[in-house]
Amino acid sequence: MSDQLITIIGGTGFIGRHLVSRLATSGYRIRLATRDPESATQLMTQGNVGQIVGLKTNVRNQQSVERAVADADIVINLVGILYERGAQKFGAIHVDAAERIAAASKAAGVSQLIHMSALGADKQHEALYARSKAAGEELASKEFPGATILRPSVVFGINDDFFNRFAQILTLAPVFPLADGGSSKMQPIWVEDLTEAILRIIENPAQQGKTWELTGPDVFTFKELMEKTLEFTNRKCLLVPVPSAVMSVMAVFMNLVPGRPQLTPDQVKLLKTDNVASGSFPGLSDLGITAGTIDGIVPEYLRRFRKGGGTQPLVVI
Image (tube, rainbow, N blue to C red; front, side):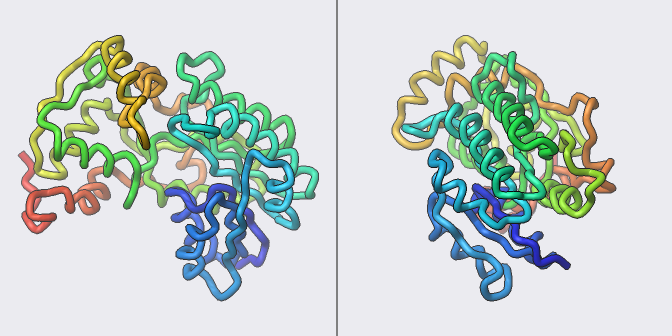
């Protein structure tokens, strides 16, 4: 058990919510630095009184970041966006904020910095998302020598933003387009395996200061993942191959819709390339973690998308 103070920046998001529970159980004190402190209140019940606190933080503001990391033993940067809206730009969040958080953490005497990047981060990538993630990694390591860099693949689990999102779309849509036939490959990781990996890195100095490729045990094409989503939900939808050039044009108009876009041109660019481990960096097995599988986990939390609200049994054809 530890009573060290961990500041989690972006800790009220999907990964953060699961990580807070894991760290609180291990006795860590947790400061949730977030734009919306009210979103942290529901997480406070996962620890003892006063063990988990929220702090309003704007990662684009220097003083706000300095307050967030002050007196912390460990800082975990989970801040990230999947699309741009208003002031929430890839450069501002993935690059500038990463540099600001790392520099402030170093100045505050933080002992560990864990920076969440993404599998496929590449300064030469066609997609701005991937380029910004690579730039953020570089600056985080420059400002905080010895920073740990995490590169997870698509993360799945209860209330995830992948299988739940596509299950909802496939439930309603009679036809679903697949860029270039959905041939790009992915290696999704269970959120509980990801949070366990973070905990083991925190508690083992020998594992710190490395770049980690954190993936699940199986590689699927995007089409296969959509087929599994249909299988798990007992739904039918025609999956239609569409050239990526056509998808890019469609995405331009879809991105104009207010609120969260279903697809952006940058995401189409991401789907052109595989998102799997290169094998050049350590992964879950190096931490002694046996990865959970999609087949063993996803069907249960997608049952609500089946006809009858999940009361009908799953029929595998």
